[in-house]
Each structure stands twice: as structure tokens, then as C-alpha cells.
Amino acid sequence: MRKYCFIILVCLVIVGGIQAQPAIKVSGEVTKPLQLQTADLAKMKRVTVSMRDRDGNEHPYTGVPVAEILDQAGVTTGKQLRGENLTKYLLVKCADGYEVLFSLAELDSSFTDRTVIIADSSEGKPLPAGKGPFRLVVPGEKKPARSSFQVTELVIRWAKE
Ligand SMILES: Nc1nc2c(c(=O)[nH]1)N[C@H]1C(S)=C(S)[C@@H](COP(=O)(O)O)O[C@H]1N2
Ligand SMILES: [Mo]
Image 1 (cartoon, rainbow, N blue to C red):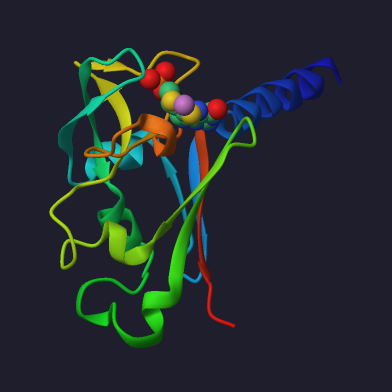
Image 2: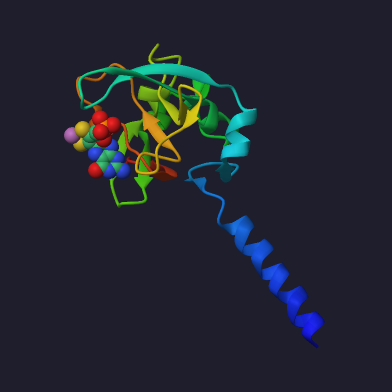
């Protein structure tokens, strides 16, 4: 009996460990909903961008372009991003309830050269606890207010009536 209790306990610890892995959920108007962990992001296309934080200094952030994540989730990007698809938006949700919005065209390389990323590291190190594990990094804006930290969810929705 004690042996079974021990095995059950071990299983619970393993399941708990798997569930505890932080992840970003990608949902809404997607053909392939995703659940991305650090290990998944590590296998995708990675870039480093620079952004001026609230301290006024430029800092490098490394991660995956949001456009790449949207592509994998089957969101309308590139040539498909026209007509009514231009009324779709991305809502970024964070662990502290912070939310910011982007129209899909703001994130698409056929509209802009600016690369918005989901960063998971800076200068070879994971992001600090309060800012990570995943931070949206938006280069080229006058303030870092849309560069949401502790990102948990990317939701694609229609704005059209
Ligand atoms: N999750 C979350 N992200 C957030 C915020 C927040 O309150 N919650 N504040 C934003 C604002 S208003 C600013 S100015 C920047 C500050 O980031 P920094 O301290 O790295 O410069 O984070 C942005 N990202
Ligand atoms: Mo801010």
C-alpha cells in the first residue's frame, strides 16, 4: 500500500512539474492554437532587438518575432493580410492583468520593418523575475508602455462589426 502511495506521489510531482512550466497561449482567430514554452521558443527563428527602457537607456532583448509566432498559429499574415483581415488585432495579456493591443498590420513585415518580439532573454540571461519569463519588446516607440512584461497570452480577434 505504501508503495502505491509513493508511486502516486511521484506521478503527482511529475505532473505538477510539467504544468508549472511557464508558457504563452496563442488563441482566438488562429487555425492552430499554440502553447509555447521557453524550449519551443528556443527552436524558432530568434532575433535580438534594442529598446529604450524607462531608465532612458538602450537594452538588448532576444527572442522570437511575434510575426513568426502568428505565422505558426495560422494567423492571416503577409499576402493574406488584406481586406477585412486588416480589421483583426492582437491583444497581449499579462500575469498582472496588463493588456495592450496591436493591429495585425503593425506586426507584419509586409507593412513595417520594425520587428516586435517575444523576448525571453537579454545578454544571454533569462529575463529577471518581475519582467519575465516572457516580455513583448516593441522597438521604435517613444515610450516602452506597450512593451508588456510577464506575457501569458496572445489573443487574435476581429474588430469589425
Ligand atoms: N505586465 C506589465 N507590463 C508593463 C507594464 C505593466 O504595468 N505591466 N507597464 C508598462 C509601462 S507603462 C512601462 S513605462 C514599461 C516599463 O518597463 P521598464 O521598467 O523595463 O522600462 O513597462 C510596460 N510594461
Ligand atoms: Mo509607463
